[in-house]
Image (cartoon, rainbow, N blue to C red; front, side):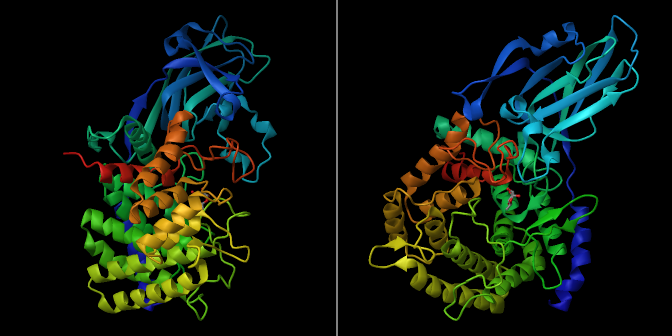
Length: 522
Ligand code: RAM
């Protein structure tokens, strides 16, 4: 890598550290005592009943193996505290409490012991907490992401009874939701509701970095950060937390100058082990969008060469026609559908789109040579991609030896400007008629489908997608927007169990940007 860039990594990490946002705290009490019941008609087979208000908690006493489930009525990310006291007898033994924190009712209904997915069980939010002396204030040490909490006396032989009271969550975010301007009254009711849930998602994910998911992975992935940042620019407009994230990513590039797809914040920032082509090249639009929204071109100038480098690294893996064929077998993500989706057309369109963003970034940063290099890459790859993926006779976009048809391919070739607007419209309309076209499963890819539909002038179809996808989550009771959503398969999970899915995921917040951009307040 350019020795100068390499030398600057330490400096960038120091700048990042100075920009680390303070967390605002808000305090929340539960609103009701609930029971979670099997219900085949409910999403994921579990529904919630509310037999009592939370005030009745103080009049309940719990014996061994008894418990209570509380509903906070809203999605929260934070720490729980409560008061526990012995009643009837002195506390002749420590108090062993088990907590289960749940984003969705299914996490309370299903047993975590049956979990057989392929990510660590430690992500499932449960904790055994033993209290030596009563009465006491109990504070489970970990931060949790939840709407519901179940508290059980995990002890069949408790020699006394317990009363729980003063249950409270101290929630955190670096966003003050009071800074979010009200929506224009012109926004239709269903979009207002989508915007509301999207803003909750954005604020919850914006902690000291933009976390991809507040339950899991609690780390920063570039693609997730980018879409959450768009929601922030359209609402609270808190730019320094995003600047903090940009400096972290650039400060953690490797010796080749490659950006890491994700990074860990604690105990000190380190790059994650995954390198994803998508998230490397998307540094360019992420930086461009930040600079255009904030007007902070000093940061863009400071970091833009890292973004250009990502495009050059990807271009080095293109064949003689300018097509990225992934000769090194790198991780190409596009969507959480790895065994089905053929990603070649999509990743080429994405690299072209990112190279065009890099060219614009270069111009705005006063770097005409870099702008010319980025434009040459974009044009060369766009030519290669047209030839390879567009069937000019039928107007259909295809990818791979089986000529797979997918939303991913059309969306990214559209955003990259590989197709003309008319060709994109035709490709989308053809796609809508192909029953087995591969549909998106993540809000991330769906976001880009919506973007592409707007880009090529299919506005009604863009809003219909927003309504069916994000509106579909709202209809199923989403308190925040999810990591994956398949209207036909509520149990869909990339990890072998929907318990492991994240139900507050940064990349799903970007929908707010479409709503706010289309309906600016007066
Ligand atoms: C998962 C998360 C994250 C995503 C990566 C690719 O760990 O869903 O949001 O960006 O995969």
